[in-house]
Length: 321
Ligand code: ACO
Picture 1 (spheres, rainbow, N blue to C red):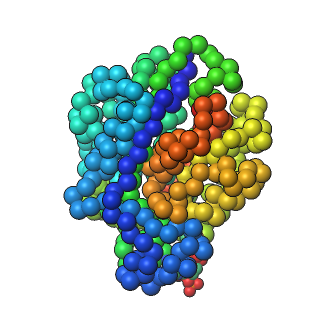
Picture 2: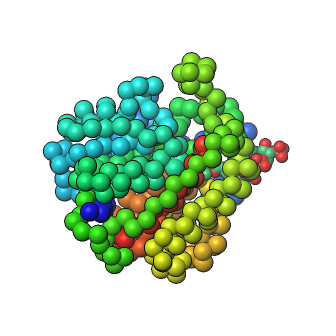
């Protein structure tokens, strides 16, 4: 048994915050933000709109696109660093709202959460434990930002993306549709370069995002290149075989640098960071949904998903779409 993605969907809160509007709140400018990051605007959840609300909206669209109903879903994974509550898992709230039987849990790998969740679902399917999985990346980072800190508040946004993954009989070959290879990494020694300074067991507060931007940038470029090489080696494919790179959308300069390293031209990289900013675990399924629904990514294409985030965590999946 192997697994393949059979549908995807996404949701963005309707409220858009532009760089110009941000520049009225903190000492920054559209020019500074665009040159350093490529970000022009971000979506911000409305008061009372929670991560689970974003997740349910994205999941509903993904299930429709995949042609499945709640009765078909065996397992739900929500990748999020901004759950509604400390517990229970946001995934169980989503399960209840969708009316899914089976089981649900959250995965916490910050910006790499979607790749971690996809890899986990793939393993459950390969083990024969489940047949159809709903995977959602959903975040409300606006709630953990210090809106007085210009170094961090300009970089993030809210949103959700989802995919439905299903078992297919047989081992398959590299020519067959499916998840061909996945690799995950983490390095807890880099904890203090990107973290939230709160939590139930430490401060009993939610806390704010803290980041050493330059250091994160440096590690991201190296780690992402390494993990892409690994999934290519696992399959025997070459950089020239890649039809689409769907990266975690942290910063335009990280995306460009990764693409350049592998000789991937700009028109093969799916970019949403200009409109969505960094939506953490939601950014890959948001970008994937855009490129699948507008017809850029077609059946048979080779697609690489890759991400790096707090922890550090990083990973990649290589897919025959
Ligand atoms: N507006 C105006 N000036 C700013 C802003 C802002 N929003 N933010 C910082 N500055 C100032 C700084 O105070 C500093 O001023 P100083 O020299 O007087 O002290 C100056 O700009 C340069 O600051 P740096 O931090 O050195 O700027 P840098 O060129 O490194 O860019 C950035 C910062 C954009 C954060 C960059 O380091 C980066 O993109 N890092 C990657 C971080 C990232 O993507 N994190 C996402 C989470 S992890 C992930 O998803 C991979």
